[in-house]
Length: 78
Image 1: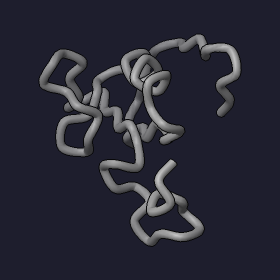
Image 2 (image 1 turned 45 degrees about the horizontal axis):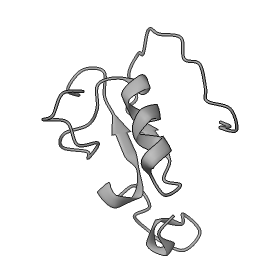
Image 3 (image 1 turned 180 degrees about the vertical axis):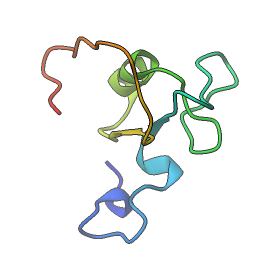
Image 4 (image 1 turned 180 degrees about the horizontal axis):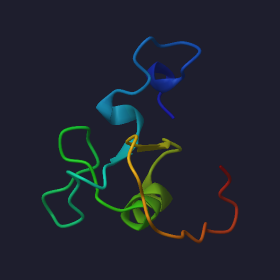
């Protein structure tokens, strides 16, 4: 995780480089989605795949309904 993304050290720990953003209403899992606030992923599953390649950044879910079940990869905790 980037030091500037640590909530105890940074005022804007929800900046684009600090997370994998997901929105069920405006997100896109195809190539147009890039996990930013402007172009978030649409599904938690896509975010979990991206998380495996990320550097410890959290998945940030928009305050929406996600009507799915999710199997967390081994070693991942909420």
